[in-house]
Image (cartoon, rainbow, N blue to C red; front, side, top):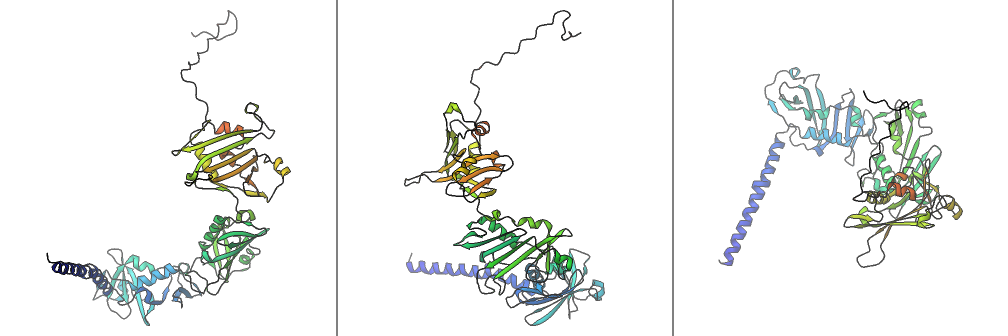
Length: 507
């Protein structure tokens, strides 16, 4: 075939394909959307065009919502308060996209449809024009309600779920978020509670406790705290608190101050306008709830148990991680038990008993063998080992010896695989355990850390805190030798002599 002919045919095919896509496929979608828009009750109005809405709430309050300069919704009547964005957007969308199920061109009197004085009237502005929708009673057929436009004699039926967007309590129109902020902007925080206070700052992307001591912070706990604050929602509002309500916050049960990194107001959706610091205080319990104070005069009602979401010990903000690694990286588990004078095993020699387990083809093997799944369980416990408390920032040799840490009663090490290029295998965990006290827990230290940690008492259920506990709970029991004869049944007791006490013969 002539090359020129080939190119012409290819061009025609491409042009035909483009025509089918633009006109038949995409064009059909555009035509369908245009036809649907033309059938709306308020033709030419889009959700983003709605600037304000006035309606009577379900609890009988005349309310007005307006978009501010940043296009965010705000409640301006009966009080000035941030509006709930999803609810306000839902109302705007329902008004703009409201399309009729049926059109009654020659209707009866408006009262027949509940569109007279009893109608629910929703007024709104869009593109400089004012509109009004009247919503009446339920239609007898289908999940629909009667509706009409002011100045239009026609009566429509509309889907009930669309009309329900206008049936809201005043509280539903209010932003229930207690604090609105971008968590990534928080660069420092100070938390206070009766008898305690802690300050933290973010340095090079990591959180650190700065007061009352300087120590690494628990970044996961800080992230959870900021998440709990950002998702804290009000169950109700107290706009004019009295003396009893204010007294619950004097002093607060918990207070926090967030310092935000500098940014231009409105750069982030949740950025508070012209504010660099946010404050929140949670009061005592009153009437089954707690009141929360922020910058305004309104107090928020939250569940009484929400106070439990906010840590009220300095140690709760600290990094208490003794070991953290991916379980799949572990290749070798090493355990050493040292005799500290409280029951050494003379048979194994004085001082130390060592144990190793290796992972091969995904399975752990060791001599002596451990109970099924115990090696994996031990590695899993060490992979996220977090202490319950920090007993001291540093301890000397005498204190270590008194706690069973010099030498340690138990040493636990997890080692990874040798790098492909050679070199030393990485040590994933290196933890020493001292004496275990049933009421206080287990004294522990970690390589590279000066602190004396205290593991929770339940750690004794997951970790071998002594050689005796290791052999009793973790080591597999020896199997009975194959071929052993079953034990002989016991010989019957001799029959008692005549006249002697014994068991009466059966009749």
